[in-house]
Image (tube, rainbow, N blue to C red; front, top):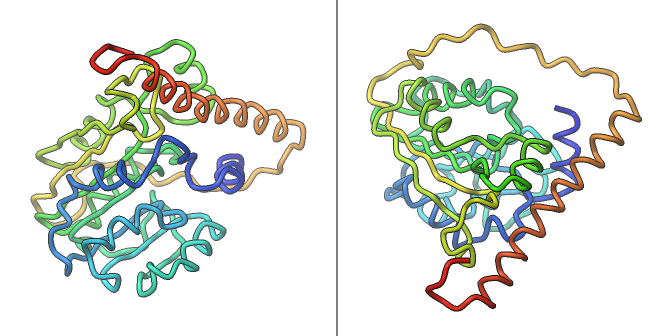
Length: 264
C-alpha cells in the first residue's frame, strides 16, 4: 500500500491525462441519477475533488462528503473554491467511518484500483447507502491487447466487467448495470485498456448491512521500506504508467488519421 500511496501522490490526479476528462466524468456520473439537490452523497476515494466537482453540479455542497486516504490529495481538494461547504475528510474505503443507511448516493471514481480488497469496499458501499439508494463505482477495465494487458497486470488492479458485476451482486445490490465509458477519440475501441473504462451501478433495496459475510479486515501494518525494492517497484510502476499516458496519444493520432467510419 505504501508504494501505491506514493505513486498516487507523485503522479497526481489518478493518471487522468487522456483517460478521465470532464466529459467522461459527467457521462460516467449520469447513471448515479443525481437528480435531487438535497441528496446526501459521499465520494469515496475522491482525491483532489475532480469527481466531486461533477457531483456538486447537481447536489448542494452541504450535502456532499469527500473521503480519501491521502492527506496530500485532501489538502488539494480543500483549496478548490467550488468545493467550499463540502465535508472533506480522511478515511478508508474498506472501513468507512459512517453509520449504516446514511447516504442516498455512493460514488467512487478512480479509486478501486488502489483497494487491497475490492469486494470489501463494495460491501461497505452497500452498508452506508440508504434503502432505495444507489451506488456508482467508476473504474478501469482489464484490456485484451497483449501488451496493454502485460502493463496493466504489472501496474495495478484492472478488473474485468464480469468482476465488477459479481462484486456488486455478492454485496447484495440489485438492478446492477454497467455502462462503458471512454474518450471520444477511442471510437469505442477498448482492447488497449482505459484507466476509466466503466461506470457500474446497483440499488440497495433493504435496510441494514450487506448480506455478504466477510472475515475481519486485515490489519494495515506498515512494513519497513526496503529502498532497493521501493526503487525497483517505483521504476516498474512509472514505466507502466507512462505506457498508459502514451496509449491515449496513440489513439488520438489514429482518430485523426483514419477516416471516420472506419475501424481504428
